[in-house]
Image (cartoon, rainbow, N blue to C red):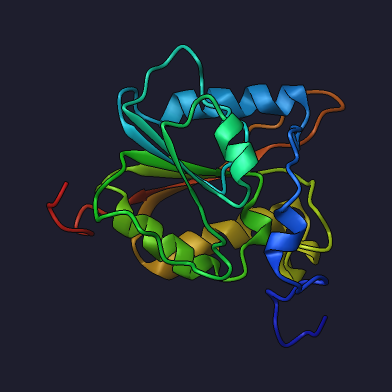
Length: 211
């Protein structure tokens, strides 16, 4: 790895090789999972269309809230098929193709759960998120301190928890398309996995009026 590319990874082989094997496990502990679900209940609108970016076999959405549509985008089809909360899914490598196939102003909210550390072109992806989300819609980036070290980008591995929060906030800010940006610490008490989130809302003047 070189200092010239902060988004370089130790393993630069085709991501399909690494993510081809299904991992039907949670990547944070049970207390952090519960905190994630509470966070989504607080911010994602009931009845809305939700984008679960970098999705897997679980979305951690509250089961007592109904959503109009939950679209998952992830790397492993077996995991996506196993997710009972998804109404649809797309298999896509965002590091290879950072553009999203969804139409403008499609979603009322969205999230990426403990996966942002693997994005090699995050600002491009967050610009796309602003396009496919409706004005005023929240997008949540939830993360902990766990990672696959061979696939996490160099800058993530060089930072501590506070640095991760500042880095993720910068992804929203660099697009110029989000406001009302919040940085949250939702870490459970005790010897549990820490849990942090950055929430931004798409600026009202962004996007068209198409559904």
